[in-house]
Structures are given as C-alpha cells and as structure tokens.
Length: 287
Image (cartoon, rainbow, N blue to C red; front, side, top):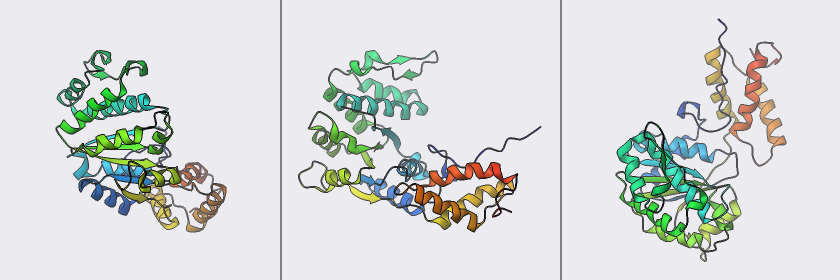
C-alpha cells in the first residue's frame, strides 16, 4: 500500500508547538508579560507569524491549564456591532471544549442575546446570533466583560488586527474598550496589529485612550540558519535533507520577490514543492 507523505510545513494556521518554527524568546517574553498581568501590543507586518506566536503562547503548559484563552480576528469587522459579534463568538468557541458548566455560565451572562443562541442535537451551543440581533452593542459588551471578570479562571483575550477599531464609524470605540479593559481585573489582552503606524499612534500617543496601557512587542523575520535547521528536522523523518546552498538560494529569491513580508510561510510554500521534487533528483543541492 502506497503511503502518502504529508507536507510537514504548515502554511496556514497553527497546529502545535512541534510545527512552529523558533520564536522561543518571543514566546517566553509574551508568556511572561501575560502571566505578570500585563497587556501586550504585538506589532509586526502581516505574515510574520503574530497569530502563530499567540497560539504558541496559549499552548504553553502554564497558560493552557490555568487560563481561558480566547482569540479573535477583527480584520473584516466594520463597526462596533461586528466587533461585539466576533468577541462573543470567539469566547463561546474557546469555552465549548471545556464542558457545559463553563460555557453555560457565559451564556447565562448574555441576557441580551440568550434567546438567539441555538443548540445542536447533542445539546451543544451554536453561535446562531445574527448581526441584527445585537440591538444594543454597549449592553452586550458590558455583559461580555462581566463574564470575563467573573469567569472561573483568568482569561487571556487576543484581538488580531486591532488597529481596525480605529476605522469604525463609532468614534469612541477605543475609549469604550479602554474603560472596560481597565476595570476588568480577571482578564489580560494581546492587541495584535499589522499597521505599524496606526498601532504606534494608538499605544504611544498621549491623545489616544490606549496610551501607555500595554507593553509593546515587535517581531523580526526568523534568520536563515534557524529556518534551515527547522526544515531539516522535519525532512529527516522522510530521510531527506536540503543543503545550506540550496536553501540559501530559495531564501534569497523569496526575500527579493516578497520584500517586507518575508516569513516562514514563504519558505514553507517552497519546501512543499521541494518534497515532491526530491524523488526526481531535480535539485543538485539535495542528497
């Protein structure tokens, strides 16, 4: 029976620490900030691995066992209603695997939306809320933060593409969120953003509500040698290896083709094809 060799390089999303390249120091720093009850503004261009770093942090033993970890991406949201929708859905998604008692407590706090939550045939809740069901987003937001404050474990909430809130038509969203976050002692937040200028203004300008509210972290591209070691670690499982010369060749090509957004995903995309090419001996740098 022919065994299919799966590509070990994850191009999208996050699977587990085993398939996450490096970021050891960054993971330790982010974990340290959050366990010391500090909010974090994580600022870096798109495709540099911000969301992967957050998920990797959430997988650390001292995090996943002691916190409720919640991740939402608000890139596509257009207003406060959609933000509240994404936050509520993200919390329910994070709590569902933890058992009925945990998610039921959250739903009981959402009095403004309780009648719109549906259940599947197994009794598990479904986020069937429509955007039109959120009649008073401020009230629903208060209910969500009341849950975060009263949850049975401290909560870590990561909000990806956070700079999006600055473009909402409601001009006081930053102040609205800052007030609630400041008074929520059972939760800490990671504000992840790819627009450096906007994020810098939000967190370093004295005129903005989030001024000096968070520790600021940045991300740089992972260096070539680290990528190479990571690649060969996984390729070795199939008795394959890529030479430093061949890897450098692709590293340079991708760096030139994708200036400013060079990331692990780009290298993995090339390596996906190299695995298939290997068997035909088309790359002289392989052995």
